[in-house]
Length: 251
Image (tube, rainbow, N blue to C red; front, side, top):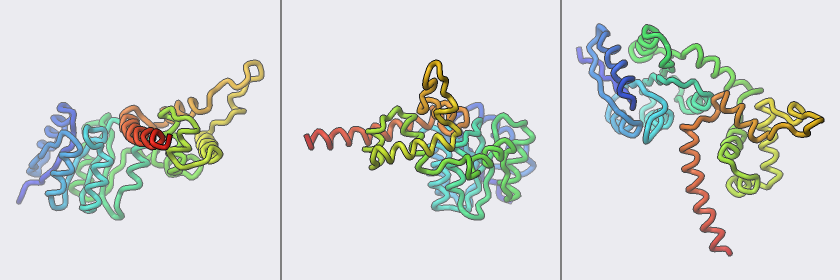
């Protein structure tokens, strides 16, 4: 019998060593390949037939969600166990959009007991059944509920204010009127259960800045995080340089 060929995409050496030791305890013979970043994981995954993968989510060069999306576009039969210390709603939201129909995958938290991690990996990679951590299921419920889940344009508005953009700059970037920007922001505040009356105090007037409050609530929910905002900042800077060149030419 040929050994199971399992690709581990993990940039943290200690986490990789943990998984390597866990897999070597299996009765089945396992061949392990290590990819320390998402880009290399994608290149290696593309060379395999019916890839079996354990992937971190926060990785250099390409995060686990983008890695999975690119791999599944070419190999929807790939079975991936996402293992992460994060249950951020932004990842759960992104993952829900990219999983192909009938694809088997898993999501396990690194903080889980060793036995649970082993069970999750076996369930997905060997038994071909999905396995989602109970804590992640709670986030999935919130992310999928019509009253609390952000639409794509509401999430876009959240990213813009998290970057500190003014209404004018948001309007330029998203091809909106200022009224359109305000409409998106109001819709975002409603979804996050934030309104001016909630934070109004007659003695001091408007006690909270709603934009800042929205970012704070979103951080607590895991809708944004510092790791992914670095990428959003890079994309914004590319757009902003192009925007400045265009307007300097017009002037």
